[in-house]
Length: 277
Image (cartoon, rainbow, N blue to C red; front, side, top):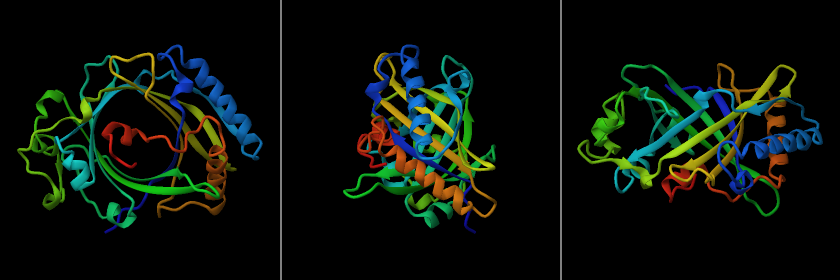
């Protein structure tokens, strides 16, 4: 049985150099960016509410990805395995196993879940595609399940990582005893700025987020910047026509922003080095 989509999120890559500095000195640029978004969207008849802020310490996080040396989970199985927890924390690591694909039916047909934590998502991400005449979008569908582990160092093989999940398509997976390591030896400090909303309809607001990534040990130069807005879909995985049209209008306006880098790498592409999305 096909899973129903629960949300749609629109994402644009920003010029990370505009946010140069550490997690404190970049704040004026974040404020300037949101002011720009308010003005840009107002010119297109779209209202905004709130402001981007960084008040929640849970939104300052450390993260990395695990895969085999040849990235077989990603390349062979379309799986991403991410570990994340609050910065400066000694709490359990939050594990996310995500199947990502451009085929909605294939992504929706996945049935894997965490063995001890039934938190599963099926979502759609939309990004800008560079075109010669007008901005277009490309959709990616993700089925994900979350689990937890106390000590990340215990995850040494594919089998260790996937032991926390069940109903996986075993035929496409690397052998369980294949060693894993941090993808491209990359550890990221992630800061998420939330609190801003876009009014897509009288009773539908899209939640905005801006994300900055710094490489561990390089606190003064962010390596990735992303802005997104998302809204929940109904129980049938659908949304009203006006909501979707307004969201498309927002994305089209963002494509013209001098803050947006339509040729920039997504966070996943940055992490994996050779990923397209």
